[in-house]
Length: 266
View 1: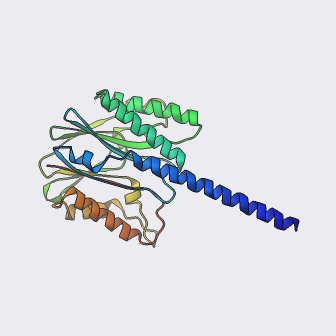
View 2: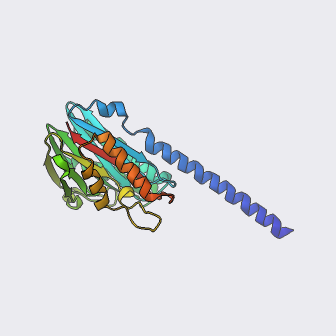
View 3: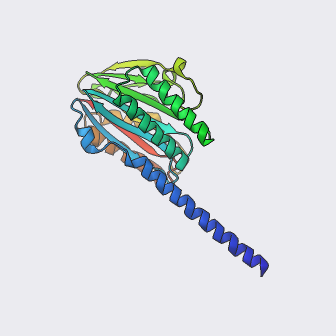
């Protein structure tokens, strides 16, 4: 009888903990999606055709993307916070707010921009007493040029006709929030765009999506799908890639957020 009561009490505690975790995950999902750029915002960017997609994982990661515009300049950001759950969502929200603030006050120096962002994230993560950090690439667009800074996944540059160029961002930055000073690691690279050229940005939830055999979707497959459909609109390319990734995953559980941005010069 005593053993049965203990089992019942344990089950009650487990159910309560599961409900708490589910509530935390729901909050994290809302945090992650409520500040994404709207379709109407993206349509207001005159020189670029942009389509974005984010699907939070079952356990919620910390993917981030944003598109901001003022005075003819556009700033695009994409990143991924380590870990899952509410804490990752909070760090992602911090990054979004800091990037928007620095852009709004017209901070254009890439090294200073990323250094300030890093220091604030680092100090807050230390206060939170956890080890969260994030990879982040920022792109500044002005007059048919994209300036890249920050370390994240390879950037896919697509030229007219679907020709692919890959840009390794390893030398353009350092994980945000891991150490207090990263100015010495920040680099810049400028890409010239002509009409019909563009870039595709993504998080590792896309390239590391697994099929039922445990094989990754992979960067090569992503590049092939993008290249074969580059004559289509950004919105349609985004839909085709997402459908292809989801078909590849099949009935597998999605362990990481899926985030994709397709950007074309008009």
